[in-house]
Length: 401
Image (cartoon, rainbow, N blue to C red):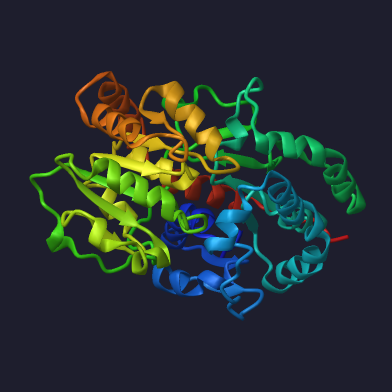
């Protein structure tokens, strides 16, 4: 049986786009394992189940990765640059031996990596294995003229990144943060959103689960009013701790004829419910895909996975980027005319209400959104599985060095 190993970062937005391809690879008769997502092991067991390799201990809730302190830290440009350097450069060398040992033990035919997992790309090259860069962001299709704080940080890291790969004798190409595979580099988007891709990059369409994604949670569906347009607000699973923004948006929309759903993490237990309209629903974690299929508008930080899912469901976006590649997604959404970027920290309640009203209305953005949604009817997860399985079938691992 052919084997495919996924190496991913242990975050929801990085794991979730991998679930659909992994499920479809299993359906094609391939054995699938995950490495690096041990903190999301319960989700992998429900979605697959998939083989889990590497560390088995579940990391503690880490303030350096999520929660109130993390949300505060990412607003400090110097701290954020240091955190990105630690993730992309400083930790990598120590991770390579462990990943090489996993590869030698499990002997995958193909390794599918999150393009931010530089250690996995290095390990795959050193073990003579073919590997796929399965990007969960839009980094591989960024236009040369686009700039951002994240890309500025990447430029600062270029010498250190070059030295890291040279240390292991590995030649590599990059676009933004992402390492590009010489075998297959993919993006979960279509030309309708991003335009023609650069040479060597394959556009797949969206990646949605074949069945359960494994992270679905209970939700009070009976509280939803089908007569009201549903507005869904989430800042993701990592920088969700934004009490001021939740309060501002709920105040701005309180008098509008709509229903608001907030996915707020532990803030769901501490937000001032007495200040909320009875139509507002607050949960710690929302079944996002199911909600987007009913939503008329998504207010979001602009995480790549969230943007992809909204477009697949035909939902316009009000994007307030908070850090990193979220600004890249906002660029593409505004360029395509299917949403609006609005800094919720700076915007007034009147600004927010006006933006929501415009995006809920019938307008040109609806026509453009339908065109992108039509292109997003492609099954990107199945196409990814087809390409990965073809690569696995022709794989002839070289000798490890």
